[in-house]
Image 1 (cartoon, rainbow, N blue to C red):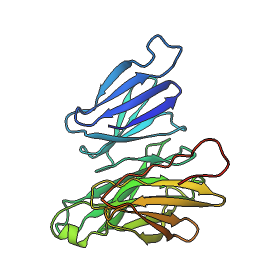
Image 2 (cartoon, one colour; image 1 turned 120 degrees about the vertical axis):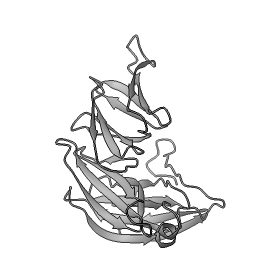
Image 3 (cartoon, rainbow, N blue to C red; image 1 turned 60 degrees about the horizontal axis):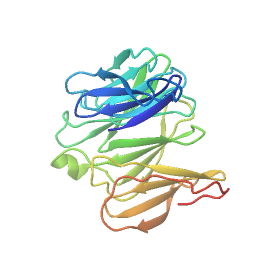
Amino acid sequence: HKAIFTTSPTRASVSNITDNSISIIDNEPTSSNYLTVISTLNLGTGAGPHGFSYSSVSGKVYISAQSAGSVIAVNPSSLTMETIATGKTGPSTASPNGQYIAIPGKDTTSDTNHVVGKVTILNASTHVFSTIDVTDLSPDHMMFSSDGKRLYVASALSGSGNQVTNLKQNVLLVYDSSNLPSLTLLAQVTVGDAKTGHRHLASVNHDSMMHIFVPAGDGILYTVDSETNAVTQRLELKGSFSNVFFHTLGSASNHSH
């Protein structure tokens, strides 16, 4: 389903979302096992492994066992695992310095009228974590700025009945993450409704600012300016989509959208 690469050792980890396992692939070109599956780690019934993140501090990969409501830390060398009960989870992301892991989650069972979003910050050294609640919002993909001072959180669709009616699935949350594990909400930028359970963000640096690209179910790609936290461009693409990726063309000094 998702994959992540490590360099010490040089391996790839792949989540098998319906098989509740992780495949570990040798990615060292000089190895006799190059590009072969050297181990498959069983995460247990109902794990539903999703996205990964990697911490350069702990040297571990962190897999979101979204169905089980936990994060599993895997040592790519020893292949040992540690389960961290963080609650319902989504694809995690590591801070640029590797010290913290940001994890989205949600509670759709405690209140039939409201989804309670969860934004969890996990210390990669101690595996101690703290969680803040965001009512009527379902956090999905998260992204740090390159300096780690901002955390961007995409809203997505979740829940049923009155939960959906009250849900804010049309915002991009902007947090001050310069003092992790503490988070301070700076802005809620209005974009289009997600209309789906997952929404992926992309970004590119441009001088001192970032362009954040937010896809939406209304067929529009929104561009958000990191300095003003305002939408600066709406590109109508028609249809409905939830993923966006940024690629630089060639090796020129400028960038391409």
